[in-house]
Structure formats: C-alpha cells, structure tokens
Length: 308
Ligand SMILES: Nc1nc2c(ncn2[C@@H]2O[C@H](COP(=O)(O)OP(=O)(O)OP(=O)(O)O)[C@@H](O)[C@H]2O)c(=O)[nH]1
Ligand SMILES: [Mg+2]
Image 1: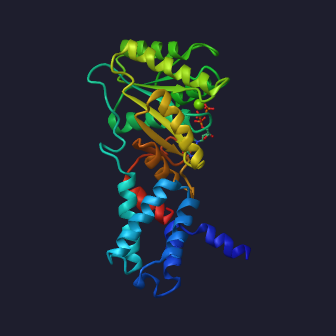
Image 2 (image 1 turned 120 degrees about the vertical axis):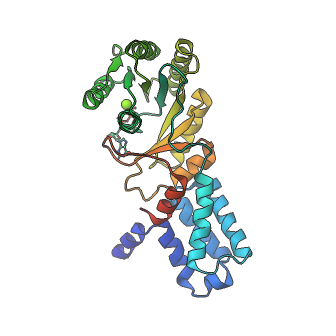
C-alpha cells in the first residue's frame, strides 16, 4: 500500500490525469464524463491550482470534448497545455524589467517574511549584471530584523556591488532615499531595494512600505519603476491572500514566485496569475545565485503538467 502511494505521489499532474482518462479504454473516445471531469478537477485543486484556474481549465476541457476535439491522450494534453498557457501568459516581455528613461531604475522588492526576498534581490542583481551589463547597487531597507542588513551586505560582497544600509531599527524610507542618492552620485543604473517582511503588525508593515514608495517617488519621479512582490510557491492559497494584501497597499507591478524547485505543487503559479491578475516575472528554483529564471508561460504550462 505504502509503496503504491509513494509512487502515485510522484506522478505528475499530467500522468495522473492520463491514468484517469485511460483507465477505461473507451473513456476518451466516448468523451470524458462528469465523474472523470470531477476527478480531474480534484487533481488540479490538489496541485494548488486554486478554484478559478481549475474551473477555467475544466471548462475548456469540457468545451473541447463537446466539440469532438479530444479523442486521444495527446489531444487531452494539448487542450490542457493550450488553455493553461493562455491562463499564465501576460502581455509584455516576460521577465524584462521596466527601465527609467534617464537616471537609475529603482526596483522595490516586497513580500512577507521568509519568502525569499533577500535571496531574490541577490539573484536579480546577478542576472541584471550578467545578462544586461547593468551597474547595480543594493539597498538594505529591512532595518527591522536583526541580521537582515548583514545578510544583504554579504550578498553585495559576493556580487562585487555596492550596498547602502542604515542603522538597525532606522527608517527604511531614509535608506531607500540614500541609496538613490548614492546611485546618482556613482552613476549606477539600477537600485534594488530589499525590505522587511515582518513588523509589529501587518498594517504597520503596509504603512512602512507605502512610505518607502512615497519617498522614492519624491526623490526620483517615475520611480520605483517596478515593485516586485515575492511569493512562496509552496504555500498555495496563502500566497494568494498575501498577494491581495500587498496589492491593496503598494500596487506591485509583477510577481516573483520562489521555491518552485522540486515542488509537486507548482499549480500555485496558475492560482496567483489567475487570482491576482499580476504578471509573473520570474521564478526562483533554488537557493543559489543562478536559480532565477524569467517566467515563460508556454514552457511553464508544459512543465507544470509534466512535473518537471
Ligand atoms: N529552495 C529554495 N529556497 C529559497 C528560494 N529562495 C529563497 N530560498 C530560501 O528561503 C530562505 C529565506 O530566504 P530569504 O531571502 O532570507 O527570505 P526573506 O523574504 O528575505 O526573509 P525575511 O528577510 O525574514 O523577510 C533562505 O533559506 C533561502 O535560501 C528558492 O527559490 N528555492
Ligand atoms: Mg530578507
């Protein structure tokens, strides 16, 4: 029993759906019926797709079956991949970050504690340096948590880029302001601002972030060019709820989903894209500097079904 359960846990979403559709050899040819569609719905919900994305996928499947377009497992898979890829895609250049027409581009990184903000700042810095030849400066505007400033400074040393930090317990908006000053003075073209994920209260955190955004915009009109919300891809519906909070407070321009390495539950990305309506810009797939990839909807749709 145990071993068969382990095996079934390791199956990809697609393998499970396929197994279901092929159990009865005639099922696909006669068209999947209510029970089978319900089972597909359950599989998608289990993989963290969330209700809206699951419903959209199952409805698309029903329509394709009704139109006689799903006769084989290949048809079934392609109907799912096509619809999923549509759900995940957003207009614009995947991963490409908005740049200021002149002066430094400012990217503010926000999210609750432990989701991977500081690591993502370092990964983004590495990527922008290597892929776009940018001159990057890091700002440690998480002045709340002991050790946060040092953590960012260590990354900056490893990356060979300057860091601006304030005193522990200091004003994060002042750190952001000083970082922009330093970037202008040093002719740096990109400022990445790390922020706190926890404060005394959630409302306190949102107030603080709103103030950081205000101060940045006052110092440099048009900035921040991007406010990137970091969400943990392994926490399913919680990530959607966090997303809504930040959306109301700081209007993020995009989402970075982390910890998607080895997660059999990557469906959260579909839930986040559908329920928040924000573009997914990058995905984090590990703890090291190179574990960040631009989000590609079509490729991710394939991977998500295949469990790659
Ligand atoms: N497996 C995996 N781990 C990650 C990823 N991104 C970050 N982590 C790990 O998650 C943990 C928390 O990362 P941090 O970058 O410190 O998270 P944070 O959001 O800055 O946390 P706070 O500063 O406490 O709010 C660290 O152990 C990271 O190495 C990822 O994509 N995959
Ligand atoms: Mg941090």
